[in-house]
Image 1 (cartoon, one colour):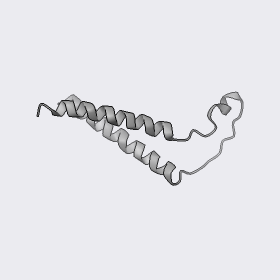
Image 2 (cartoon, helix red, strand yellow):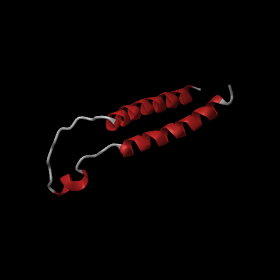
Image 3 (cartoon, helix red, strand yellow):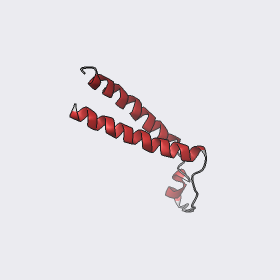
Image 4 (spheres, helix red, strand yellow):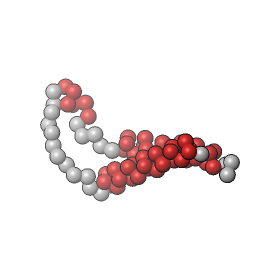
Length: 74
């Protein structure tokens, strides 16, 4: 039982890196063009790999939150 906090620490680090990677991989659309007056608002749906990355990022973020709460309890 004494190894569980250590395992949770490593799990949080790995999950945090995965969340950062997942957020960085998602498209932002126009980027900085809206800051310079370009405000073309267009609606697009997520498809294929983009949709999978979006949902995987949500799942990993939830897992990170669960490990954070478990680390506080233990």
